[in-house]
Image (cartoon, rainbow, N blue to C red; front, side):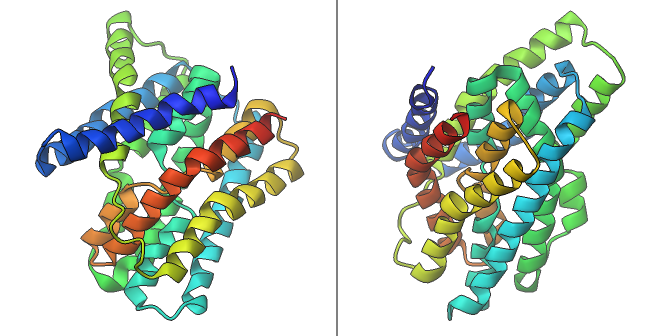
Length: 298
């Protein structure tokens, strides 16, 4: 199947979510509750189910994990550089800083599953287990001057990290899910991806595209073009091929996570700049993500 046919249904669901949000008359509280349900129930079920079935060889996966750590650190460095490039208030920088390295788990897991099934989800799940804490710690640290937040509590209580760690431990221990639990988790996992994509679309905001345009376009360019190119170079240097190479590039080429907006507003940052960056990276990744993945497949 071509990359375009894999990607197209995913972005159709994102656009469907945007349309439902603006046409169906559903209240904001509905979308907040849906996002919490996806984040705390459906996506952890997907990650645990996929990883618990995977036979994980950390020796084989290590180059991919190192690639992910290095390109994430590079994204953080480029995000920090924007502080010196643009004359915007500190809270604009603190919020936009996230754009250079945070990733949309919903889109990534959907694409990984469409491309490589449970193996793809397990591979990006491993990456998430390492990179979600890195991304959260860096984001909270930079935003901390504008509000309060218990970063340790947020990391340790993150349901995606807990599900990843649990699934890996379950697999390494050689356990097998009983049929009833396996079937329940599989049903929850099936619901997670379409609901997650609809929630992504519902959260898009395009009303701040003229706000802090230097930071805005710098972050978008780094996230969709520069960071995947850096990841490509690092992955090639480590000799990654096949699934591992494609999942590393997929991870780096993701649009920005909607969690970045929630964190910025909760910690009294500039919600407008990161909301615009999320919307732009999501929209433009409809073009850039298929291109990067097609190149990765050769």
